[in-house]
Length: 77
Image (cartoon, rainbow, N blue to C red; front, top):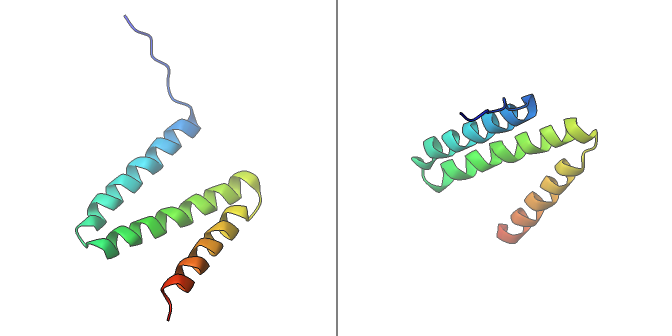
């Protein structure tokens, strides 16, 4: 007989977020690259918001801003 432990609330929350993201990506994949990009955008915002709540700083948002600025600069003409 194996004794299993219940996951902590943080572990359950992380697993729920992961399942939600994976399900959303699978659904959005039917839309092609635009859908997958939309799924990643939603996930990036959720990660930045969670990090802000966890740390009380905007560092994750600042990093996301830089990433998006660099991407836009690369592909803007």
